[in-house]
Amino acid sequence: MMITDILQIADRLVFSQTGKHLDNLQEAVIKGVWQNETYREIAEECNHSEGRVRDVGYKLWEILSQQLGEDINKSNFRSTFERLELTSSQFINIHTIQSSHNFKFCSCPYQSISKNEKKPSDQQQPYCNLKQAPKIIDFRSRKKELLTLSQWLENPKNALISVLGMAGIGKSTLVRYFLDINTQPFDVIIWKNLKLSPSLNFITTEILTDIQDNNSENNNNILSQFLNLLNQKRCLIILDHVEEIFIHQKLAGLYKPEYQDYQNFFKLITETEHQSHLILISQEQCAEMECLDEELYPIKSLKLSGLEDGEILSGMGLKQDQDSGLKLIEKYQGNPMYLKDVAVLIKDVFDGNVAEFLAEDSLVITKEMRSHFQQLFNRLSPVEQKIVVELSKFDQPVSREELRQHLDLSSIDLINGLQSLQQRYLVSKTKGDTILFNLSLLFQEHLRTPVNTSH
Image (cartoon, rainbow, N blue to C red; front, side, top):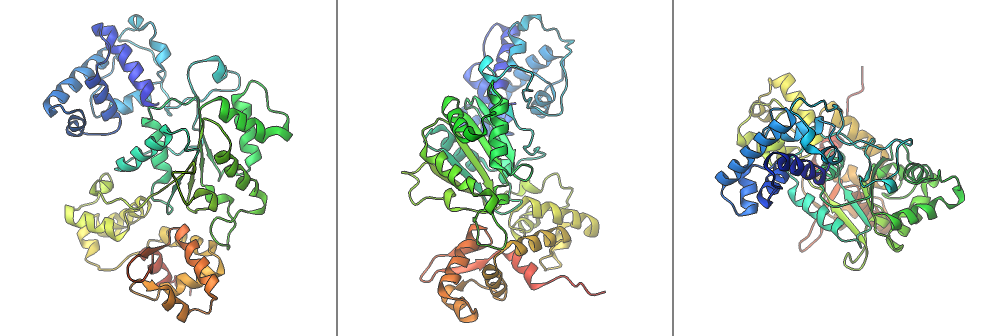
């Protein structure tokens, strides 16, 4: 459910009991709690005292509990509304609802429209299909990134937005969570996972078939029809795992022959007049995801780094103090996927004691991480493989000239390889008197300690 729906439902429930609509502070409390904010954070944003915000929240939960026949409080408000299959249209005649409600329950807060139901043009509710989107178990921090996404999507000129970063850093989770709290009106919201259906023709045909009254049988004109849809309706289309359309063992962002049509598609998205947005989520950056001047071109790129907040470890069942928790986060680059993997290991071997694990004073690569890193290494081009192997031998950042002395590579191959590795988020650069290049520490440790396959 999106926050606009939640506010409409809450407004009608409150009006039914009090005869008054939600005021600004009540709306702020609902929005804040939906976004997992504390009362103190909500108070600071609204310039009210924390006590005042608490009182408003308490009265809201009391009203909602009475209207819905559920015990609702700050802690379970979001989960309860997601569990109940509610739409604002159910509350047009809200006074008829009694506390002994018979609402349906569902496992997913988003309800897609089946082909037998009315299309978006016949109703006010937006078409929302998130069947291929990931479920969010937990979400931490990223307020700055959420605000950035919101600001970019407010500008109709920002047609193409990329969310980029290493595997497990939280790209898909960020975008999925953004959709939960999004307050901007879209006619169509669709999430496509390219691991499941990478064909552009298949994806666009499927979207047109679901959205339009006709079945888009004229395959010769699919792309034109799709661009018309983006112009006629305000659409938000998310393509996840875009790296699936890039070829293995080549430099980053080069399209597989069967998916070359995406290159033209991404260009058309930025060059054609329409009112929609396309979000690309990828571990790899291609040329169409970047531009020299973001003020002149309708392209934005959000590159995610690791989390630093100690709250990321909450709920993992670890025994930790603030110091040991932050050290563990730093050691594993704030990557949620890596931290979950190592948390399991710490619980299995160290009974969850983080300080005892850190006392080992070694960077432990779990078998799950090692499998992931090996797949990533196999994906690299031969030039990139040579560069990362050489970089792994150094304990400090290295200049391009020093690398050249150790590698049997031409100058252009070395330059292209370093650029490609940065576009995969495996290598970072440090600016100073001399530009230095640094390999990801975890990936470096993987390369330094190969698996012993002897029997």
